[in-house]
Length: 517
Image 1 (cartoon, rainbow, N blue to C red):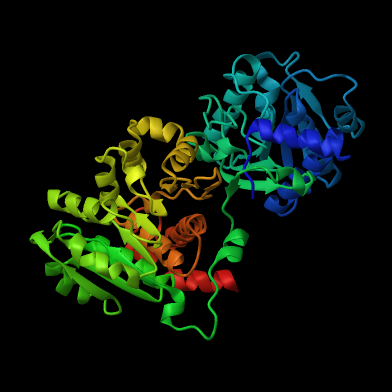
Image 2: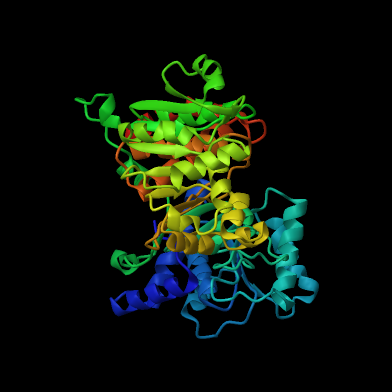
C-alpha cells in the first residue's frame, strides 16, 4: 500500500478527474466510505448520537456526505459548522433537506450549543481541517477543538473519528498542534499520508483505517514509499518446496557476542533458525563456545581467537576469510563489544578486501566501528543491509539524534543512496530504504519492543530471509514486518511492559504458518 505526501495526493486527485472521476464523485465516495466504516465500528448506527464537526473545505464536504448517509441509516446526527460554507453548497443542501439539525458558530455565544451537543453525543466526526491546512490552530477552530478535548478528558468514552487526518496534524511532517484532540480512529482517504507515521502526530491518530475512494490504481504507480501489509508479506515470504534439503534454505554465518553480551549471539542465531535458515553457524570468541553450545544445540560453531577472555582478536579475520565461501549470507556486529581488537577485526574482515558475492547484514557494534572509519562506505563494496537505531544512525551520518528522529524517512533515503546500501532505520514505524529510492514503512509502533536484544532478533530474522533467497530490500522489509508483527502478538498476550526479546523467538514459526494459511 502506497504512502503519499499532500502534493502526491493532490496530483492523483487531478489525475482521477482527468480519467473521469470528478472531485464531487471522490467526495461522495469518501463520505460513503466513512459512513460505512463507522457503521461497522459501531455495530449499528440506528439511534446512535453522532456530531459532525464540519470545516469550510473539501474535508468538511466529505463529512457532510458521511452525515447524510448516517442519518439515512437511522443515526441521530447533528452538524456543527465550524466555518462558513456557501449557501449553494450541494452537500450542505442535502443535509438540510433531510432536516438534520445544523448548528454553527453564528450566535453560539461561549460555544454553549456546541458544548451541549458534545455532552449528549457518543461520536464526534472531525471533518474540520484536512490535508490542505498546516498552519497553527487559532481563533474559532482552536476554541472548538479545545471544547472537544475538554469533553473527551471528562468523558473518555467519547469516540472521536478523524476524517482523513486529525485536525491539527501536519500530513507531511507529523507535527501535532497542541490544541488537536487527536482521534480514537483515523479514517484516511485513498492512501495513508506520511505524517500519520511520524511522531508526535502518530501517537494521536488512534487506530488507522485506509478507505478506498475510487482513485484509479495506476495513478499511484510512481509513488516510491509503501506501507508494509500482511497481504504484501504473504506475497513475499520465501517458499518452502517439499523436495528441499537444508542447503535449499541457505547457510548463514553469524559473527556476534562477547563476554558481556553472550545473549546477543544467542538471540541472533535462534532468530535466523526460527525463520527458516537451513544451517546457522556462529563464529564467536572461543571461550564462549561452551556457554552458547549448552543453549544452542542446533547451531554449528567456528571458535575464534581472543585478545582477552570473550573478545574476538583482530587475527580472527584471517581465520574466517577462507571459510566465507561456505555461506550464503553473513551477519556481523550483535554484541561484539567495544574492545579495540574487535574494531581491528571488523575493519580487517569487512574493509581490507572484497568478500565476494555474499550479502551482508551489519548491526550494532560493527556499525559503530564503521562510524569511526572515514569514507567507510567506499571501502565496503559489499551488498549490505545496515540496521542502525537512532543513536547508531547519528554516529554513521554524523548528526545529532534529535535531528535523526525529526527526519527519519528523508535521512534513511539519503543515506541509502549516498552509501549505496540498504538501510533499516529502527524505531517506531521502522523505515527501510534502498539505494534506488524505494522505501517501506512498518505500520507498528510497539513500546514492548523497546528492550535489550530485540535488535539482535531483528538482525537474525533479516539474515535468515536473505539465506532463503530474498533480495536485500525484500529481506530487510519482510524481516521488519515479521519482527514487528510477532512483537504485536507478544504485546497482546503479555502487555507492553516486561516483554523480553526471547519472547519473540518461538512465535516465528507459528506466525509464518498462519501467514501462509
